[in-house]
Length: 202
Image 1: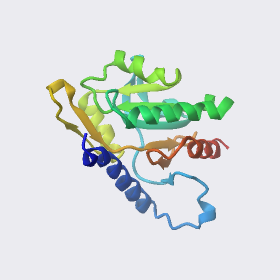
Image 2: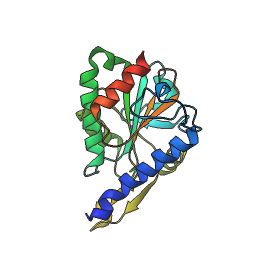
Image 3: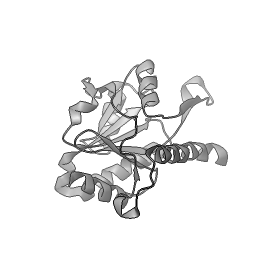
Image 4: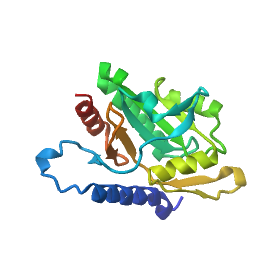
């Protein structure tokens, strides 16, 4: 992978974060911004999804009301960003201790062609048994990605089955009432995420 190809998803994620911040009019005093992640409260996106979990159950955002929802888009064949993020979120859950029971991590695949229910059921819980993988038809995934202003595109590989996905990275965090509150940049670190989740829980 070239240096340009490697950094492309992260540049897109940065641009998305900046766009989200500008839409929110983040000109509030610093004292009113206690979060480490970008505060996106009030943004008109990420309102809902209609997908299926890795156990075959239809899911919407309202199913997880009462918990902090940590949502990440990716795909199981991702070489670095996706497994790194899931590993980081697994560490977050450990550091939360008993509060981890009040948090639900969701992994939405951007690769419905290869990420079957069986593969997601094997891949996602391997990071943490409580993590949930979500999938849908290509049309459902495209609709969901649009709802989150998320960029993704297929990049050809050495064979038709060995393609990769160029996609923006970042984590969306909802408060227990189901409102999208934060967007965490890729690689922000477990400590920052633990800090922000505890604020939302309290």
